[in-house]
Length: 378
Image (cartoon, rainbow, N blue to C red; front, side, top):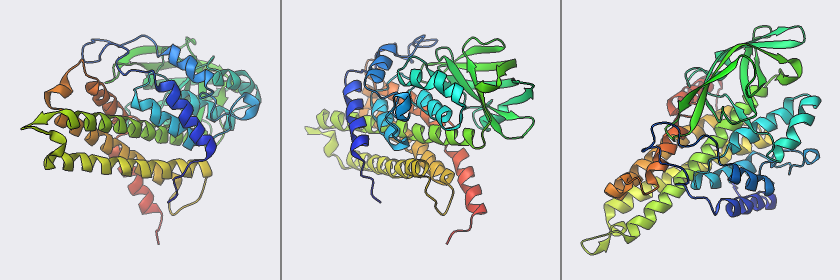
């Protein structure tokens, strides 16, 4: 496999490293010491820096002020963001904007995309459904009434629901039986959020939709729109898990190289080295499956299985791998790893959130099993 990146993709990485260089993981109160949400909003100052560096418009066409890059470039940037636990809706807003660009009407594109690329409009996605395990499109129904759509249902654990200007809500059309994407403005009549708090300490929203009426232009009913958006969100989540895991393994390597027992750095002990090596293998497997998935959705290349098979494999490794990485890091740090003045416990909390986001490993194992049963290999 050739995982070399283009000059444009590498330039995006360098820009991301420059922006995230000044970010510290403990910029908000610790979730371990906070009863509610750690903050009321995401990091707006960092968001502005991302906009100034043209990192919010990576996937947008040039006519909307974007660079026209692909999912691989976005994943490279997300990987860097997770190393410092950047508190921004970069994945959700970028993926939603791409869905609007690819499947939305011209009026909707003209209104949203350039502003989203400049950071003036923030988008998020209700991708967890009612339980976090069933398909998100099954949690809400959408019916057509003349020139409008009417939505009813509940979407849980919506990231940045209180702060985004629009929530992209997948819903099942009662007419066609396929998923549509509805762009619900913040504060829209009938769309009421109820506060939830993630393991990361971030404020989520349970979004209740009670006869929410939207103009037809604000609903994307193109075939495949939700599936494409969901695939990018899942792949981006894998990139976040990889970046977080790499950051944690780096912290662990530094700590064990300095921490001494019996006059020697603990990193020189065989038991410590073997555990670290196992986690390095996890990260390399997470990386290989991530780039395979990102390449499939970027190139639309064919394969023995649909691209969803590669995405499922990447999410299985991301969910299980990131969990093992942070658990080993906690073990090798000893009691120091649980110190709330040290950032490792934050990474552990974020890892648990990423492990379960868009379905845990078991859910994707079921998806992969169904695909293998339906497609003859060899």
